[in-house]
Length: 314
Image (cartoon, rainbow, N blue to C red; front, side, top):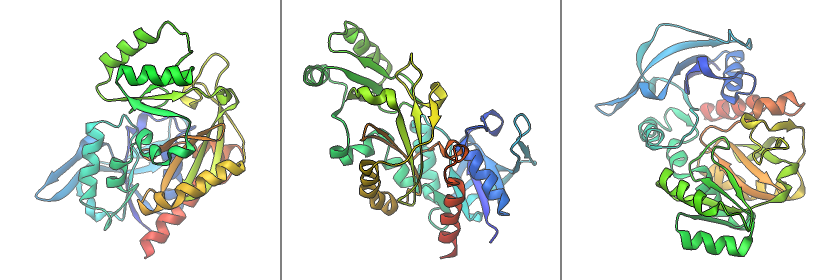
């Protein structure tokens, strides 16, 4: 089976191929003989009910500094492709939301991974609250009285923007931290939407586990251990990847959320678990699959393409 694949992603020349999950997917697709085509979200257009993009044929190689070749750009109706990979990174803003509306016009005749309507309706830090019993105590609000009451109940807290990414603007506040008022003012003037306030989990020092689910099934995991001088475990913030296995609690979390993910067409999902608590469900552009393979774990990219090919056969 040779599929015509279009990937909607950030500029290919800027990615760090060492840890980039989109690049791992491209390598695996090319190895299987699929035809790769690339475009950035700004090249999308809707005209007379059809979705077009200026695309370029793409070939890739696992060679830092020389990892891609592009052909001449051409205008193509995206309905001509078998699969579109929705892989640009957040921020999850109105530009991102608009692309989901456009891609919804071609799905599912052209398979969009992940389903664009459900990507739009399942932002990482909101969708997860459907499983509140699996989470640490969590408040989503910008109301000062609500946040003060939450802080009074739970003491040490973490504050972060609702639509943040990669560990940006994540702050820990201890019970008696005098910076609370200033941080509230900063958030209130910076972010128009609500933000996330969560009970601080001290065992973050032992790692924030990224667990990958493919079509609702566990596929692999990597533990991300924060640097000694940082709260954040994201690998782009200096977190160190470490091999890991699922605990019974983590296996139960995967079991609980698997069917809802599958029903929503969220084929490639990365969840974050700290000390047995589910904190995020990442559906926009999950990462971690290169780290998992490099540490001796499963080849998640291959599992993802197995699922996509099976769906295209039906």
